[in-house]
Every structure is written in C-alpha cells, then in structure tokens.
Length: 288
Image (cartoon, rainbow, N blue to C red):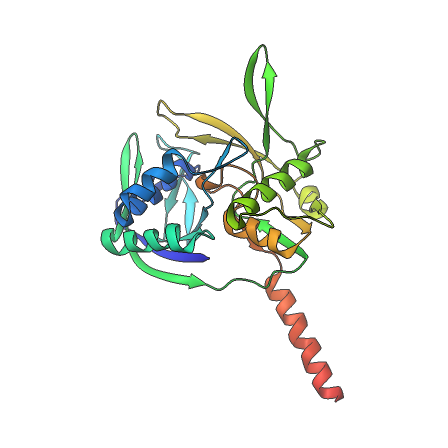
C-alpha cells in the first residue's frame, strides 16, 4: 500500500538536505511512535529477521514541488531551498495492519513533522493524506528509481568485515537482488517462492545519456556522530519474474536500506502504456 502525504513547510529559510534519507526516516519513526510506541521501537531496534538479516519492510521518497540547490551559503551544494513550500512524502509498505495503520494514526495525532539537522530544524505541517492505487503487476515491468538502489555484501578487508556496494556491471548483483526480494517475500507470506524465471537489466539508454555515471554516493546523518557513506545506483531498470515478487519490491523497496528510502520506484511509462491500451481498445471497438 502507498500513501501520499502533502506537507507544507512553515520554516524560514525553507531548506532540507539533498541527502534527506536519514532525517525523514527519523521523522517517520517519530510519527509511528505516536501511533504505537511499542511497534515503533520494535521496528527501529529490531525489525523482521530472516537468515540473520533484518528488514523493516517499508520505504519512502520525496517529491519537491519547486526547488533550487542552495548556493552562496553555509549549505552550498548540499541543501535544497524550497521555492514552493509544498512537498509530497510518499510512504510504501505491505504491512497495512501495523506500519500503515500506526503511521496514519501518528499523522492525525501529530499533524506535523520536524526535519532535524545539526544547525537547524525545518517544520512541516501535514495537510493531506491520500491513498495511491496500486499498479497492475505483470511478469515484466519497467521502473524508475526515485532514490538509488543499494545492493551490498560483506567482504573481508584486512581482517575486518565491511560492506562492498555493487557497481552496475558487477557479477553477483542480480543474484544479490533476487535473494533480497525472496527473503522479503518469505517474511511477508511465511513461505518460499519458487521462481521459473528472474531477469533484470538496467536501462542502457539511461546509462548512455549520463555517460555511464549512475553510481551515487550518499552521506547519511551528515555532520553527526552517526555520519556514514552509502553507495547506490540511480538508473531505470526492467525486471521479469513472478508478479508477486515484483509487488514485494514495489511495496518494500528494491535492494537494501529501504527504511531510509533507498530502492523506492515508480512504474515507468505508465501513462504511455495506458494511452496505448486505450488506442487498442478504441481500434478494436471500431472494427467490431
């Protein structure tokens, strides 16, 4: 299930970090806390476990109405200035009876969120909450990432385990993604899914237009003691597999670090597909 939350910024200056992931994730957990303190704590501290991995089973993204990147300030190049005060926060999770329910309760209880940065606090009012209808899930779909997809594995470097973030052409990337989706499926449905096919490819035209530069380094919790770097891939892609598994990726996010917004997608060319379908239906009706 997806919700679109219309936010209105009432702070001046109206600024948010370009790498907003950590701050908005913290704000979401706070809203969950108003819905259910116990569930919020469980999800933040533990989450859902399978094969020694933890999953939060939600993701999110922002859509800014009108903005510019700040220049000539202390936050030059690292912050958005909101020209329009309105921002759409899109929340996605299959956990309707727990996550979605408590998030909605929290929005009505709190009716505002705060984006906390070391040097400032930006306040948003919650103006509207709207349900987004699901797309029709088929065995082959194309998606556009609103936030980078993060795929990683642990490797031994000088006797210490640390994450290796997959690059776009790395061997093992597709298998890593497939196993990530299958684990989420198992958590949600309490059963394993046997696949007849699993194909995945990044959009070559997208890559060419950006001269092959589709990796993105994101700073998490910048300026705090929790600051860290995550490398993701920002590129449209196509996936062909069981529609139920595609739905898991759509609702939970593809790849890892979903609770910070990574792996959030929208269906690509949805309007074009609908237009083509309408044209086909019209042609069929005229021929009858």
